[in-house]
Length: 209
Image (tube, rainbow, N blue to C red; front, side, top):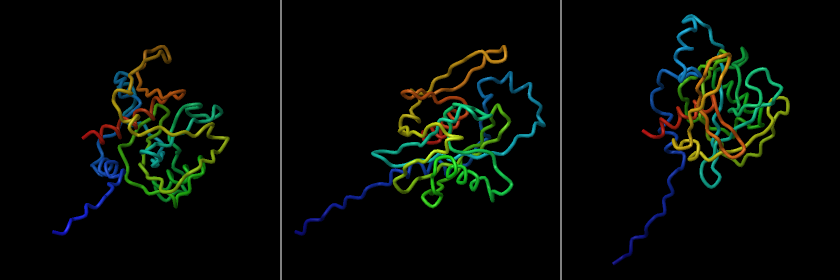
C-alpha cells in the first residue's frame, strides 16, 4: 500500500481577524458610553469632525498591535496611547486614505506594506471627532520611524493580550467636577485608556463572536 503523506498546511493567523472585521458595522461607540448622563446633555445636532486611525497588526511570534504614545506637546490627547491617525484632510481621497497617510507620517509605515483588512465601528471622542478605525495587516518587517513632533514612542502589544476581557478595566476619576468612568488596559509601563481602549474593546467583541 502506498503511504499517504500528510500535508502540513499552516493556517493564516490573520483569518480570524479578517472574519471579525467582515461583519456588519454596528451603531458605533463613544467616549460617553460609560457616562450616559453626560451624553444626554450634548446637543443632538452637534457636528463632529471626521478622523481616521489605523490599527496596524504585524506577525512577530504571534500577532502584535502597533501603538504610539503621543507627544506631550499636542493639543489633543497629549501623552496618551493611541493608534496612528488623525483628522481627515480635504486632500485625502477617503477615510482609509487618511489613516494610511497619518500612519506613514507619524510612524514611517509605508502604505505599500499595508493591507487593509476592513473597518470597525466608528467612535465619537470627547474632543468632538468621529473616528473611523481601519484594521490592517503589516506585511513586511517594520522598523518604526516616529515623527518627534507628534509621537514620543512606538511600541507593540500582543493582540491576545488586548482582546482578553480579563485585561480590560473600568476605572473612574473626577473631571470638571463630575465622576467619569472610562475603560483602561494597563500593559507594563503603558496605560492604554479612553478612546483607544474603547476601540480595542470593539474589535475584541467582534473577535469573540
